[in-house]
Length: 191
Image 1 (cartoon, one colour):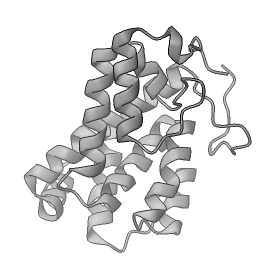
Image 2 (spheres, rainbow, N blue to C red; image 1 turned 90 degrees about the horizontal axis):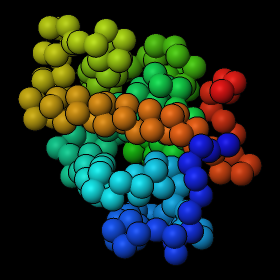
Image 3 (tube, rainbow, N blue to C red; image 1 turned 30 degrees about the horizontal axis):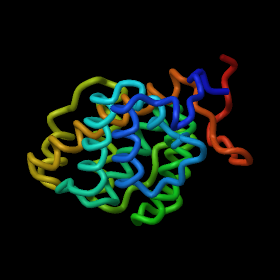
């Protein structure tokens, strides 16, 4: 059960409605009674913050120099680290669609180290995992990531992990539920 107070579109301020319109124009969402879902309803509470976060998320997902496969792989590592139910639920099919192999998706989901045949998968996974577990990158991991993604790509992937950590924290902090009938990817913890 979400901790967010439910508001209809009519209850939003003018600034909140502007961000609402921005979100639904830039995302494939189908709002119901002013409710968008995911982190978006939470971000609407602070319109300036919401617009900036939506735009930043759009950059990561659609304008990054990094191939979408690796973007989604880093998001999965982040979502699993935070046990972010909604984040994983939303991005697992996107990762599959972007070409992340099923065995890798399932290994990450249960917390196992996947078998990574692709050098980009290895560099991305190791970088995201080290950032979350060790809060820093080894020289070897950093150099492998720069070889695969360039310094620009590494900067974007590091920022992406931070962004999706914030998204995961938002979803977990507000206890955002999955849509009715959806299966939770991780064991649910009592709140």
